[in-house]
Image (cartoon, rainbow, N blue to C red; front, side, top):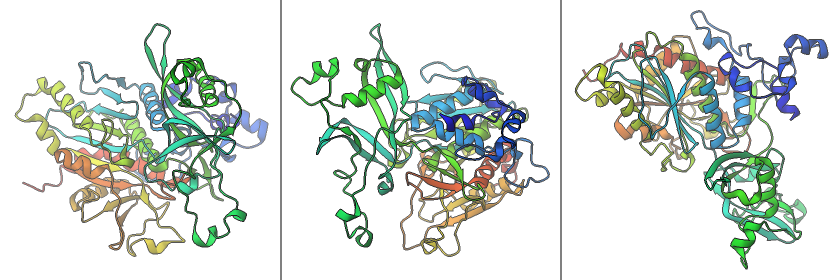
Length: 531
């Protein structure tokens, strides 16, 4: 709690003021002057696992950069990361911030009444979110300018029957999600977060998010005395038998009434100690928990690090850093819709780490259905042939997913002439085999967006003797034929339980994304390819 309070010693961004007003701790209202009287320094000078001064830029600003792009969002990103232990929490936090900024919540099951100049969003599965702002000068057939990212990260998830025991310990069965560096999950202070379905008193059911902040679980490594060759042969755990978190020493557990009714002679689905911890956090009885979808999460807060506090140390940077930069750029650019002729959109998807093939993933038509509904809703203002198809042809998608920064100890893993560095700008990703959706045209247009404010960009190509990862970019580009560029913030330790990126790269990505929303309509007019 002390760490969380430190993060609240500075005022939040004005557009998010309502979001943080829900926190009632008195310490949250301490002014900079009061802090200096008590401690002799400003809040921004005491950086532990906290945030940076909201008003202090991390880069030299340039003439012509608008006021929004001069601000640093690093402090707010840390707050977002610390709130967003799971894809559900990341979506819920984005929802709170959009509502605080004046966006209107839509329901996919209802009729929509959209207007030029309006700002709207909806969620799907509470792990996917589509938000958009309609330009005041939008005409049906004009394009959509979209930034897309994903809310999920590699993690461990509880199995449907998680209760197990070994050698006098209560353990929790988990399954691996995505391609994580699983050895990094050993000897970490772990807990649980996700969602539960509760039975209500009137016979209905409730969907609730839960996050147990205190460490509940740990996966201990084997002592070197019992594994003498581990340093020479490598640490190669069996993911089914060795990657099993400890919950407690084995004692006689008192089963809940629901377990007694449903299990009789069978073993319980989940340990009663685990259910008790969840019910205490939620504020309900164990018997009210009908179902759950829980991730195992690292409890260490996201923070600044390095001797100059120039790095961000955190879990889930891939890809929540991209999500937040996209979200904030949309929120902060939405005041400038008076001359906008396009629709500005952010699309945050789930399940990218496992292929995107789900109703909440980029493989589903969620974004394109939303685009069609927007066009159909506004078509009465300007009738025209094939309005949606024309809008797609005029649209542009930025697929934002973290990029591989060059590792100082493994620099040979990067192609010699494409070695992105931390603190050197957003990375445009290229692959001739279409693992990334970037083309010469889309890369050029995106560079023009950055060039307006002299913002740095880098380029990445994987070595020919190595496999190349992919993103949601090719999935969305091939879905309906939308122009796409793949880009990302450079980072190290991707898919580790604890990752690292540069503080300046966060602000640089935010500024480029803001410039994309502010300027792409004019840039796009200057280049014609097919006519």
